[in-house]
Image 1 (tube, helix red, strand yellow):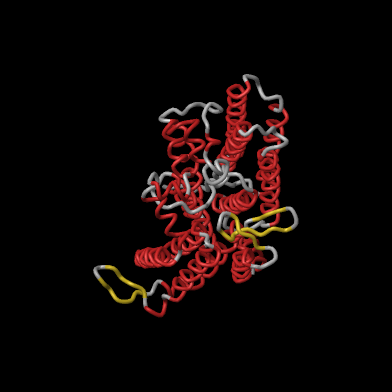
Image 2 (cartoon, one colour):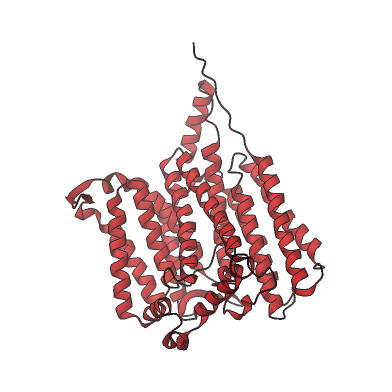
Length: 459
């Protein structure tokens, strides 16, 4: 005779706290190591910065205990460690340029980190159920489109290094495309949940591949056209690739048809070839990619060549934190922070950082698999894929796998826009994971009544 009993999964909050303390300890150890290498003394701000960093992390942990007790226990320690290591490297580059803590970029990055954590806490407190976001599907799409168009406005839009992706208000500059990534992910998830049945209908079969109907190609063609518009008017190759790749990936998750990936890759190759023929800045990036050390490429920019030589000098084990010269590479704290780490902690240390990103993406995809509603599945999968694609584009660009795109590494690179968007992204993933891991209520009259009340409230 079999006995059926309910199983209550472990919340994992104590494990999260232990891993969080370990992550902060690694960051402080790296900070001490960097201080000993650069000034042969322990940094005097160690206790203040370490205590503040630990306090901010523990506050987030306590909010999770309060508002999302079943959330994934690995995501917060991973992003805390990545953010902390980024702060250490940025401060190390400030020291190489002769800037103190108050004069350099690190203090501003620390303030942005605290603000990003505060916004993530706000997301967890305000969004008590991720399914509420489905109500605002088309509003999220409109907001995402507006954020993409803001840099084109004549007063607030500004160009940086040839790309018009920034807005400037007073003394502050912001990259709205980072936030648009979140809004568009919500829009794609809500839209594809409604239309996935129609988009899954099979059409003609060509070379063993079942293609969709011709009348169902409208959404992917529209997304392709929008990504080309971003490339043409804002000259932002990275965001164009990210947004189109995000839509194609979520379309595949929604329909489970490989033909959409084949169509998306075909459109991507066609768009890239046309862009190469028409736009000079795309031709320049391809030249720097294919023939980095040629006189023609070096006459345009030696940034990629410097980054490659820096990683080569680091070798397998690196020169050690504070003992290399990553400051010789332009934008070493933002676009080229991966070569900065590669030079000083070597290939092994760089692989360890990439493993952290892989774990973060894996936990997000696991959350997608465990979620019991279609909207949550698509949203978690889309947000996880956006992190994976952005990491691939950045690392691929600085290692000559693909052309440089200008995107920054999530959590590591300097920049408030990226920090705010990615911490909010993690907050949404934590909210979805809380719903996925939370046990179902026991079957009974009171439980059915509570479930009905919940469905009415969500509507």
